[in-house]
Length: 124
Image (cartoon, rainbow, N blue to C red; front, side):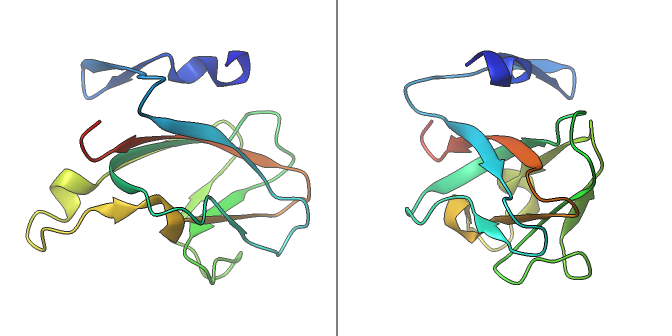
């Protein structure tokens, strides 16, 4: 887990959240070819929170979104070194719907760039 050391203890909103290796989903998405989105997982993984990081060693931007993600269709752009948190307990309280890790895709401006993530599943 050395490559994801930034996830060991996350300081978000002044509170620290510790990574639970037995329940949390985490990893690195590699976009082999720029312009071709990569799905995080095909498994059904309801999540209440996801943390993202575009490593500072990336050559270009990372585009985060759904199955149609691209440089022009995205939910979020992350430049090298950027981090981003998506909290479904707050953003979807009115609908009662959790996020699902299988709905997330990443694309990149440069082939070979990566996106690191940590997903906290419902019940985790």
